[in-house]
Image (cartoon, rainbow, N blue to C red; front, side, top):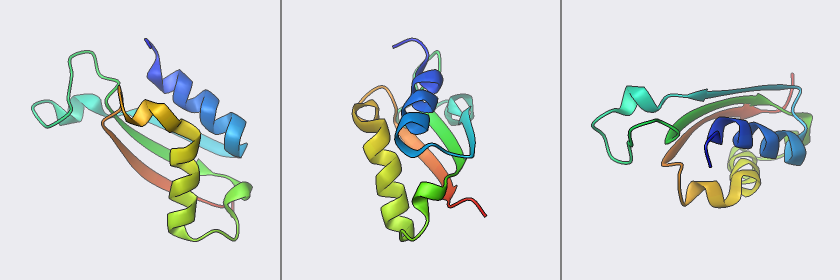
Length: 88
């Protein structure tokens, strides 16, 4: 998959209909660390506000994100940094 960022955005928008979504490829910041590969698409930061997360515990919110991104976590993504919560 060439554009993992776009696929992450598509899956999150479909599953959680966020009011705000920012997906940042931070792979270059992890050069030399575990999971880094040339070309990026391995380490991402997700900042998302979605009303669908209202009433869920922090763990349940994170599980909802991981359920949405599914098989991307096995490969090619090595790590996600999550800042997710209901829209305030």
